[in-house]
Structures are given as structure tokens and as C-alpha cells.
Image (cartoon, rainbow, N blue to C red; front, top):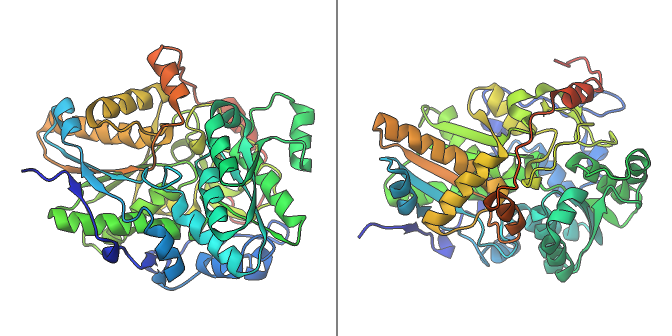
Amino acid sequence: MDQTKFTLEEKEMPTSWYNILPDLPQPLPAVLHPGTGKSVTPDDLAPLFPMELIMQEFSPERYIEIPEELQAIYRTWRPTVLQRAYRLEKTLDTPAKIFFKYEGSSPAGSHKPNTAIAQAYYNKKEGIKRLTTETGAGQWGSALSLACMFFGLELKVYMVKVSYNQKPYRRIMMETWGATCVPSPSPDTKAGRDVLAENPESPGSLGLAISEAVEDAVGRDDSHYSLGSVLNHVLLHQTIIGLETKLQFEKAGLYPDIVVGCVGGGSNFGGMAIPFAKDKIDGTHKDLKIIAAEPESCPTMTKGLYAYDFGDVACMTPLMKMFTLGHNFMPPPVHAGGLRYHGMAPLNCHLLKLGLIEARAVPQMATFEAGVTFARSEGFISAPETNHAIRAGIDEALKCRETGEGKTILIAHSGHGHFDMAAYDAYLSNKLEDYQYPEDLVKKALDSLPQTPDQS
């Protein structure tokens, strides 16, 4: 009998996260202080993050131990399953072997609790009482609400307005776990009020929601800010995905030829790709193809400028070297709210510059076509964000059909789409639309990039 699921026992779950920084062939560009232009110090970040997370951000250690208290909570849903997509292979009539690592089994329905639990733990350990954060589609806000519930922390979530309206059940999830969720732009912060004064109908953006959450946090001594993507320590926590997957492929007696994941801020993709990128760096699997799939309407990695930019609209964050569409860019309201971000994790950008990964932009209609194909073969209804990875995986499988190659394809399945049915309804009723890359708006946003000595 052909094996469908490849599982790990709880005792086989990785007990350390993998940090790629010491293995990079070239060091990651420094993060700069927006006022001085010099590299940020731990003290610069202390008003926002607990010191243990700050140390993880710059750690030279290859492996960082996962505290036992976190492992115990992880075991609520981890290790997650690696699954062979036999029916999808048959539907596509491809000789490719397609696998997907399913992160939708967490209580929040996505990969996000992998870092949310860790961030809440370290903040609680430092004596913080309250966290603030942003969220796009609500996956991150839901995950951090869950984490704050576990550790008895208050949480306020600034949710991008277009997603707040599109996905009310995400807000209800957050409130069920005890968090407060408001639409961004909101009247609760200066950053929000400024945008509302200029455009009361603004759909919001992740960059703006970050500004609101940061402003809120720095204004209170009992609060810290928590970020669901982009930063090194966030991607570090997510590497448990790729580490588990490598162990599961060993059990299957295989190794992927192609790894695909969706990218917005980059945590899900980085969590899967980074442990595999190590094998490219050390030459163990130098021909491995790693693909980052992003929205065509917000094509940060494929059409963005590699430059120092702020992570938020109000210019409150440090300057990071990344592919960016400009911190003032307001992305079109595609349903993949978690991918509507102007920037990208600097670590993922660095891997792209080094040629260790590649990027691909996908239109909204094509992603939902892939999502429906996946649902009608494998049965899983996937998040709109995840559908970008599924689209890229299907495209690679179709290439194998043309060439006759039986490549092994791994899809990072970041979460389920059970609260995204309005988007599927729009697609199935022919009401979904593609949004073009708004080149004129991006050009205008890029004109406001900060000037630094290293700007390119």
C-alpha cells in the first residue's frame, strides 16, 4: 500500500530552531537606526522587544534551544503531517511526486503559532503585561491572541481594514481568545488619524497597521510590540517546519527537487526554505530549486527595489535592506491579505540576492484556480495565501508532465481557508478580479525611500 502520510512521534519533534546566519556565504546587511544611520544596537530595540528575542535576532549560534515550556505547547499540534498528494498528481496527470507540509492543524489554523507562542513566552518572562501587533488577513492576529491567552497577556490587534471587513470570523477568533481587534487605519493612534484625515475610505495596509501597533506599544511602559514576520527571530522560530519536514523526507526515503512557499513578509516561506537552503550552501543538495511565490499585484521580490526602507508607513521602524515597493505603497485589496506587504524579510531577500532561492509572481485568479483544483483533488480548502504556493507547485508539476521528469515537489501549506469562503465564493461566481501591478503608485512610493550611504 502506498503511504500517504509521513509523521513523527512527539519525541521526534526538533528541540532546537535552526539559525542560518552563521552559515551564510556573505553576511546579512546591517539593520540601521533611522536617526543615526548606524547599525542598531540591542538597546535601540529594547522598547519594542524582550532582550532574549533581540539576542536571537543577531545570534551567532547555529542552533537555539526551544524551551521545554514551549515544546509542551507545541506538542498540542506538532509535529505536523507531511502528506503525499496522490490525487492531485492523478488530476494533473504528472509523473511528479507532490508532497505538502500541512500547518493548518494548529488551533489558529496556520503556521503562525510557531512564533506567536515563542514571542508571548519571552515577553511574559521579561514581565511584560500587554502586547500590540498588526495583522493582515488575521492569521497572525489569531495566532498571537491564542499565545497571549496561554500566557495571560493582554493583546490589541490592528487589523488591515479591507481584511477586517472581508474576514469577520478572524476578528471573532481573536476576541474569543481574549484580544481586542480594531480596523486599521483607526482613530486610536496618530498614524491612523493622519491617514483617515487624508482618505477616510483608506483600505489600510500592513505597513500602516505596523505603525499603529508600534506607536501604541512605545507609548506604554507595560507594553511591547510583536511582529508576525520579517525579522530574523520570527523566521528562526518557523524553522521547526523545515526541520520536521527534512526528518519526514528521510522516513520517506526521498529528498525534494523543488520547494515552494508563499511570501508576504516571509515567515512561512523562510521557515520551510531556510533549513533546505543550508543544504544548498554546504553543497549537500546544490541543485535544489526553492521558489517564493507572491501576488502579481504586490510583487515585492520580483519587481521591488533592493534598498534600505522602513517596515512601516509612519517610518517608526529601523531601516532594513530588503526588496521593497516603498513604505508608502498601499497594495490593491486582494484576498490574500497576509501577502499585501510592501517589503520582505531581509533574510529572504539576502537569499534571493545570493541566488539560493528564486521568486515568482502569480495573479489572483490563477491562485484560486489552483486552490480549487487542490480542494477538488486532495479535499483541503487552503488559505488564499497558501494558494500562491499551490499554484507554483502545480506549475512545476505540469512542467514535469511535459518533460516526463518524475521530480519531487514540496509545497509549504501554511494554513486552511475555512474563514476565507467569501473569496472562494467570488471566484466560483466569476466575481473575483485580478489586480494589475500599480506601477505608477509604486514609483511614487519609491520616490520617498530614505537616503542612506548604501542605498541602491
